[in-house]
Length: 430
Ligand code: XIL
Image 1 (tube, rainbow, N blue to C red):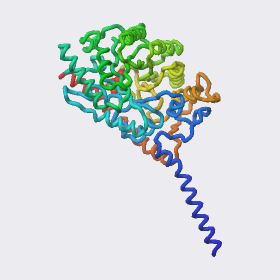
Image 2 (cartoon, protein in one colour):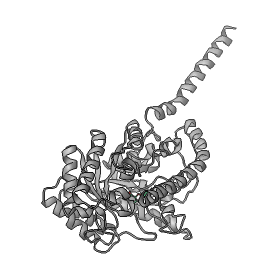
Image 3 (cartoon, rainbow, N blue to C red):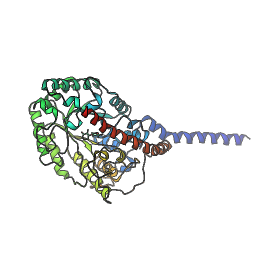
């Protein structure tokens, strides 16, 4: 009898121990949403998330979010696990924050900010002034008096930066100041303020938050002839004039099938670091042709080239992807390329693509004390099965729930981007 009782008590103890051991991964997940892979050994890249490797490399790896996306548990968990930085895709843009004069709405950006805080991520403040008429509200474009427009711009920068003072530490003060072909001035209404408008915007931003990093962001310098040189000239003038600028963001929306000259891109980034500035890849996406069977592999190599170039440059401090999954890319509703463009690291079901492995391999190689199994260019796996976070049963449940949610999320995503376009059209025809 006593023996049986002793055995039963051992069995109870053993069961308690098993339950406690099984709970450890759940505990790790709970205390740190990013700790999907408890230990990261860069010489075995598969044990690491992008975020863990980027932290080791001392760079920011970022993605984007809309407010409704972070309420999707799968989107949220992948975002927090893989990235240490988030850029609000639209929630900080003028059309979201001040849709009509003096009417402010920071709620969407506040939600993303709170998500970033909860997950120990930094936030890129994109953007205070976007110099594209197509994305400028009709009420702003209709202001023909430069003095009145200057006041409106100053009010916009002031109210936005004051709302986020001490919370957002880096801003794209001006986005896309150059004309698409690289010449100055562009047709943007903001150029009617005169050539000093960019310098004025930076000076004001610096006064409002002297501790914030102030960035200028531009697109197409990687493929529009002469545009890189035009940007260097613009930025050099700002630096020479003592304008408080800290960095230059290069969007890097790549073209399908393009092959980056890594050395040339690194050298272009050094043109900015030589001016004492930081540089970042801020909106990376690499669309592929829907009917190219080898596209996923060439896409992976192209991702590796872009990230390698950043890692080669002292002062390249960030690589941000313009989208988390292929299902949420802006490109599929932009009408630019044949769809689906599949330009990102995760497919529609949040499964990592070969491009993900490539980026992880490049980061791992940069931080590994011993050479990882991945060599340059990285070995690309062709595994296409979903490899959602290996964090125990909670993640499996999350993944299952997520796969169900993805379908709904896609519909919302499409509706939202169509909604965005309609909103712009309506506002611009008012
Ligand atoms: C895009 C968003 O992704 C879309 O949802 C929106 O409809 C238009 O803007 N360059 C930029 C980004 O600086 O802000 C743009 O984002 C993509 C091009």
